[in-house]
Length: 377
Image: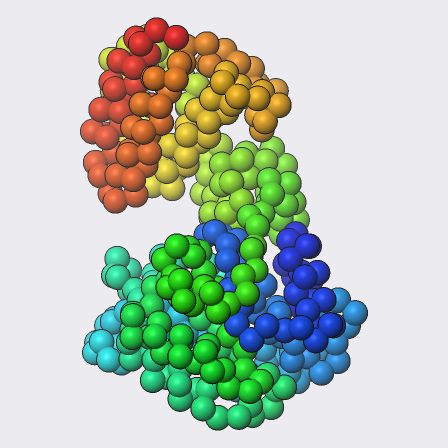
């Protein structure tokens, strides 16, 4: 992957490129970013740039033998460790290591450069299973790094989601980080630094990878996925910097969240039980992603109402009809009922992700919200 293939995150790109130009490449780096960020893509582009034999001013050439192998994830000096699980294909836990799924990994990443763990698990056949980096990986890590580089100037060990490492694997990493082999780089790509050993954190240089901005996601959806501008803006607002989620919604979202939410809130405010049931039926007919999107959109609107009423209206990220709705909607909200509504919506989002009965869930939520509106604004 080349840096030019990654939209946005220009400051982070420049930092990485300059580290190579100035010959200040830290041997252990942690690419830290939330789900759907460019942390893995940047780590891959950085590894390719470091070992490119015909570097451009601000990118790898993409055409030298090294770049071609890195882009296909087949370079002999590029090693991967990632969460796995047993599957129908790999039934023994001792064999459920990264090397057993390398073919699937090399097929998955080019089409999913901003992956999340559930997508990867579904791809290699471990849906609904607990994935981790097993203790057996520790031997693979040591074995992979015991040899000198075959072709490249630097060997690269890229560990995706190290927060899922078994303690034995984490300790193996720690020992190598303390005494790294010559010309060996460790790129840890994480979504949650709080779940990493502090001793590992202290031995890595942290590269903070920001979320994509609304404008960046809007542009990507328009230019790469041919999404019309209003829908792209709406998806960018819903997904809050998570490009993985945004791409999924570009195929699935029906643009129903805004109108549905407004009507639903009016029904709850009136405590109209008959229409609550009707809307629960409509909610049940939605696809799961649309159900999740509605709840996420609802949480976003409540957050904007909070900003409008209790903080700084200039921070509100809405315009036109949605902004007018928030202005009026905030009049029936207060700190007490708003907090309770947000808590209940978060609970409902959690349960819909875990396949709760959508009609019962939505009906109970509607009744609860109706009661909260009675708490005077």
